[in-house]
Length: 345
Image (cartoon, rainbow, N blue to C red; front, side, top):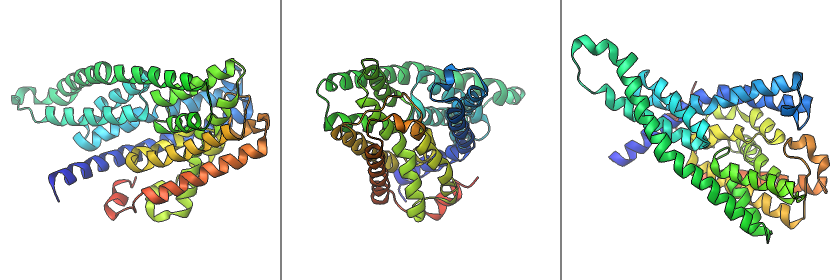
């Protein structure tokens, strides 16, 4: 095996370790958010009550998802000294809006920085201070510089650039707009590209144009739903731990919680993200073709009766799911024994 293959094999192992610790945050968080919507309605976050409390608990759990992933990516690289710096990198990614892709970058950066710091030779009298003072302090400082001044600027620029692109295309509408909008929503699932696409749909809704929102729903729900179908149909392409998440992906798909797809995308971004982008892009494009609208900002299947053509909307959603699963079948390789072991909790 070449050094390049060994390096990328190690990266894959580190990502899968981070994902294995991320899943326990995603599942309760997503399900609680779905329950909150079911109890409190689509504006649950603005309405005090038990539903809003459940929704808030779910948001807290989901908010810890990226920091946990980054923390344990760093742990996989640098052992226990990497955890704190990795968590901080993940929280910086969460706060700056760079999403789970930013968390991956931060976790890898933190891990390799801490690994390098551990190699520094110091006098015996200060060795005990290395893991509790020097490594976390210096590691956090370097990671902070990188996440804030290197990654943060491009993330903000990307958000504005993508939003401007959609706004310019929104004047003409059509299939191309849907393909781009859908692919953006499925690309980083909470990152700057996804946020730009959702902001475009909200801005259009403010102008009483609900067509982008209908496309937004389909494109946001398709990644977890399509992955769920692929988990059932193509078992040899997923580890045992990944297959156990099928229930969460079903809930995420039905409740419009795209984040249920993040562990799968984070574990294998080069194969999963293109598949979800194609599925969501096709779904959003078909939404425009059939002239669909949906007068709600969120809520998944709970609010589909608000669509102008509910049954057509469901048909387009089904097509998007099948396309996503089909692309995963084409693109995703079978799981090896070593990968199975790496993602075991």
